[in-house]
Image (cartoon, rainbow, N blue to C red):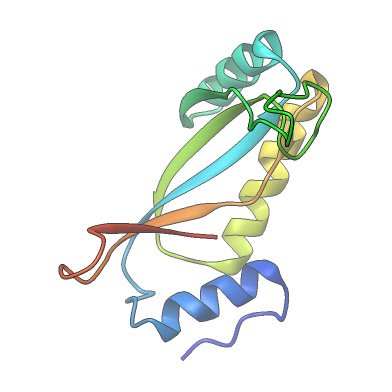
Length: 134
């Protein structure tokens, strides 16, 4: 079994391997890039597409606070725009780090930033059919 660095990304890869995921086979990764607004999200998506990434944009309306209102300035629970770069690849720590750096470099001029990654797995058929990691 591969030993991954002791950080958030390495720990997720270790968890995947511990769940019995064949780490030598390609998986569908999703790398979100947070954008400050719709215009930036569109520009980031276009730049990622030109760089060869399969992308899509999602807008999250945000979550209401205790008063039932959505605070547009709340960075954690307020509305946000995400651009997703979708990549099918064999799980590899160094490649994940490289991709996140590339995404940051592409998104930075538009005020965006890479925000981790996730992977969809087939789960036990008796439970949820899919689950997202990270």
